[in-house]
Length: 554
Ligand code: GLU
Image (cartoon, rainbow, N blue to C red; front, side, top):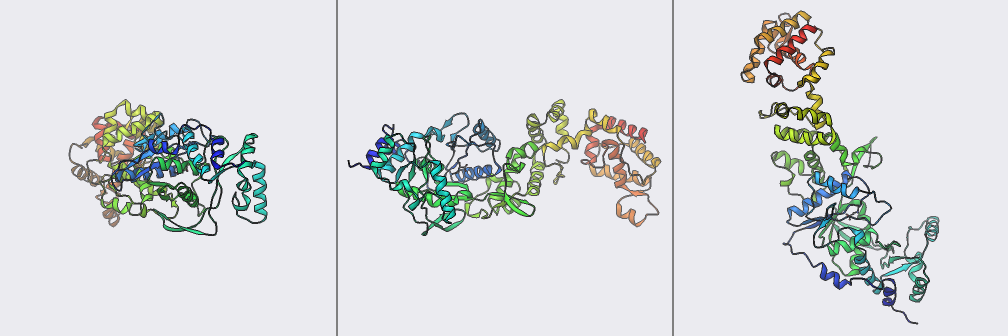
């Protein structure tokens, strides 16, 4: 009997709810202005939000937003073996923490938009409609090879030093007749569906990548699996169908997909569909013993973005940091426009670094300090509290015990034009400020105090006593400091280190040493935020009490 490809297609997919024409009607082109980009973030629910994935998502959102387009999220959950339960919802929650909120698509608990479903496992019938069309066109076929057959094929290819894969003369099911295919299916043999490639690996095709420009890549010749035996498509095929019917204009994804680009372009061409633009983003690397390597899920804590959040880095700094990777001109722009944020920056794919971007913790830390110093005291309190609620119950209790007091501590130097950059993470806030709280201070004061042993105890005692007796900080900082200098002079300490060094026979030290004595008495440490502000926050009575305590201990 003479079979047609239509007979084969009808046998495999006897009653599908849609045809390609239906799909075209269901998903009409988007009505957007010229130049508006439709981008997407397409995570697989295989675990936590990877630092590299956040980078990809931020870039996709930015490109859509600044062009007046649409940014959507699509859940690529066709590989049930790799799926980690609950991770897709968590992914969306983590993205939200970084203000990555899709305009449409999968939302973690449901979805919104006209182009759904946005979860690949719910789109089986859509994929099948397209595969049916490919079978009718003669560009897809059933493959009955078993895992053993494929293993044997790989071994033969390795032995003969051939490119591995299912292609050309190695693609044994490619040449089965329609009759053989139909008979074997009717006999109940298990099969997958493969794409029939017409490419030649020895030919190069010219492609354009938005990040990398013009490239020449070998044509695809692999007859890849497009539909697995579980009835779901592989990534390659699913992305073709989804990015077409969701009208994506720019596919931005990790550079590990660049080598599949010829295959993807062949799929688009076969369907007669216009392909989207592609942007292959650099993978984030780290230096390991002098060698660059990809951040690894297993080996590197910093591969999970949650690591930075738990550690207390402000999310604003993480975003800024990822933008310095995204565009090489970002840092310079930001230095010139310190009051603006990445939201105001004009991003371009062309200015993205080509090589794997190196993860640079010290740069993140620098940006974190810059970010935190710009927060108002109230913002600091609110953000620290949000952090503490999630990760640090002790800090939460301390803030809530007296929110105004905490805000005063966060206000130190904030009235200055260039305040000191005291913090880079919320997790430091408690340790650097414990002394402000008597519940901790009493214990801290029991420990040995780090007074400079080059000064006799009597000198320290008389300096501290005099300071407590003449205490006056109800004046501007400069005036207060002048007063401190006078007190220093009275006890034979010079106005500054330079004068002391030049006149060692006249002085026993300088005003910095005096300030250190007071600092130690009030905070138990040689380092602290600005002393003048500490005095004001603690107040006269408490300052006197602490000085008395220090003198008693000496
Ligand atoms: N699910 C793919 C991944 O997680 C998405 C790649 C793409 O964006 O097309 O790598």
